[in-house]
Length: 419
Image (tube, rainbow, N blue to C red; front, side, top):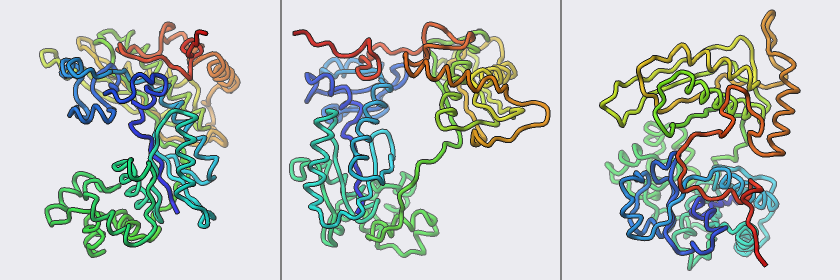
């Protein structure tokens, strides 16, 4: 059996975990620079606030309905996610972390257990230890566990947050209930095509001939169909090394000077280097892009990216920062107001063994230096040590006017109890 565990309204739940006064109140979380809505509590959804709603256009709506607005607090959300996943891993060694708030669990050798009570216990433990409510769907396949999870989340009073599809009657009933647009793996384009031929539910989809599914949705769609029919076809995936790593940000203001952009690009390159070292990888190419503010049509517009092949594989912050700024110099143009930039490291290979060039190689002294920097930053706080080319005051120059404390990742923000 497979189980899909999904954290309910995860970002909002992270804020509530440390602010119980926000229970049953509408909450929205905004994107970088407090741009648009990226997460909503159930109460906010009921007010009709859509995903992606621009914050500045909805300020009156937020104020009128008492909506609590938060800037995205990704250090907090990432840490809370890690805590939830750590608890889940205690119950089965086979766990696939699907996203920051979702994980598949494969329950081998547990056929004789009362699975409903088993997952009720897991749900209670996660809630007690982290304050995060979860919904759990259980079935013979991954796709069906997704369907079961939707039912658990849709009908919490009846299911108590856990639903199991364990027979044909439940499977057919669930698939006839689920809209084709809500099926895992069926995107908007496929959903539109399927509805045009009167395929409106997941059950209708499973009745389609294999030849049609394979023709229009390739072998991926065929696997999904078999999974929905109850034949395990989509396997658990192992954690994979990322094939590219990106760090991009919009700025809190328009930048016009090359020196200002160099500082940002250096910081982005350093973050990419840290992520490479974290997964024991190096990169062989790097992309840098910049573009102006498309929301200011009265200004001249310009966007450009460049990919440069590195002379050697590296994960050194010093070397990647240097190469990134060399790339930036080639695409920067005076006379423009730049609003966003980014660094993407490509052509990722293992750190060891690495291909050595005949003449030009990464400085071997950087290896112990980067280890020391990572150790100090992990111990004393993120980016306690920086390169001279970085802004010493802060990492991201973003608008975050409604940022909550980093309760679990910064000692300065830890909850204080007065007795």
